[in-house]
Length: 129
Image 1 (tube, rainbow, N blue to C red):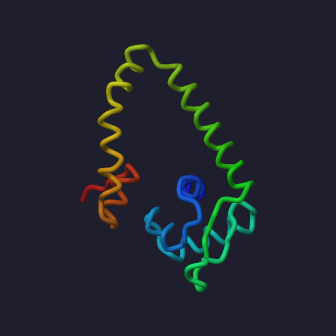
Image 2: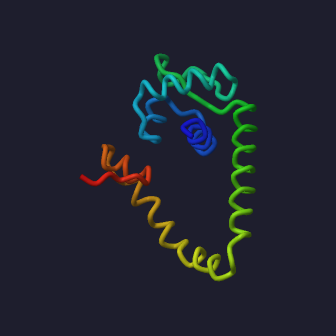
């Protein structure tokens, strides 16, 4: 899932530095470094020198990465569309009615500070003591 999140992030915000990716995805820098290295080797990402800071590099989607993201998004939309089609009209209407609350929930979750409790809440698996 981290690969898809990274592809989607770079689709929205191209040419990021690794530290910006780590911050945006709330991942440890070494995790991002490993992920970027793997995805660059497999041809999904491209690294270019940063013209502002020669010590840093910029990460972008490669054409293959853009294609992979498009395939994943298309498959995801088909899967979700098929599941929604199986719901009755009343359930679909309830989902539509819940959309404004869900739109507010996304930034509220994103605003949580990094840490174990926030990570549990974002994962949907809170643990009670």
